[in-house]
Length: 476
Image 1 (cartoon, one colour):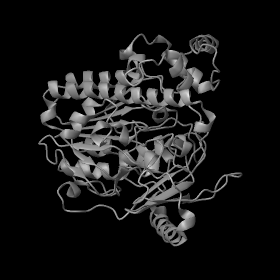
Image 2 (cartoon, rainbow, N blue to C red):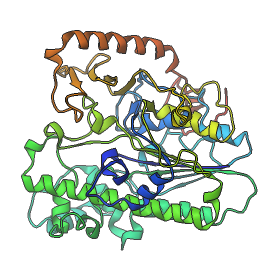
Image 3 (cartoon, rainbow, N blue to C red):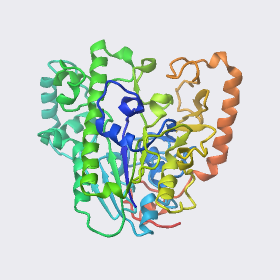
């Protein structure tokens, strides 16, 4: 049996039709969901982009994060670093079982100097140009001028990585040039040309619908027929709070994000069509998920955030489609997390997970045999949350940076499923009990979430370096 894993970035679970959304078009993912087990209580473990993918690719918890500074990356965040030398990735493990593996990716952060997320793959394809990727060396002043003209005199965001993104996309001539289209087309082309007898493992990473929210105009106009290109530019990277925006900018942001979701769906559908047309849908296990979501006006907030560990940010879409349609159409309750994807996929492929894999096989939940977690712990930077069936408790798990004001939240999920009202002052006993459970969980996993980077430092003259080029390492 083959394996296809698709990971989208910043995709809200509740913006998909299969999860109950009634106004956003996601026909391809809805069709996939009808043939899949759909998990209702899937949550990220480590957030955001890089921590989440470390968990997905290794099946291993990383919370509490081992934090180390990174000279080669502008992102200074807990858990934001390469794979440990000791990690055994899904690609490495399947390679030992004669799988041919291919990695298709447009997530710039995974391919920065010193990162090693292509480790273990037989071949990999990097679609350049997302976010601040220094891909196109063109005159940024020209882009600023064009942006000012397109924005019709409105203020222009001067942040360098936004300008770089606009420089990168100057050569785009149509929808097929968008990053998500390029990734899915590359994966589909590879699939159509695959003729080996070995089973394959395809890992497909899609940075959309991560901001900037700038879909082709026709996708945004599905949700606001009057929106213009200038409107999209005006709201493609909103500030962190609604109070900093006009009502029109808020509407434009939500419209553009919805358009991005439908764009992603259309091109995921392109890859799934190629799988079907090649006949491999009859022998391929499919996993579709996201790394996390984001706030979209809830509590007056936009974007993800280190203290925003509520269901809008931490809850995931998660679909697992078995080629024999086992579990098709089932809506599965019970806490599962990113670290459970690898052992579940391996179990369905008939393979044992490596010893370093700490996740659990989710499939007994699909079969009605139980096996869900008692609670789910998620963390982003110095903040963590512990979620039970009734409560979600959010607090700092480690020392906050100087000048930060601690925020402690408690949400009663029975009365407030959207997690809009902080009731920590009303339930101090509940907060105390959940804080103790979270601390116990952190202490249990602390010895297990560190590792080494000797292969990255080798030859650098230093004991540790994020600037060294990554190399393949299969040490156990």
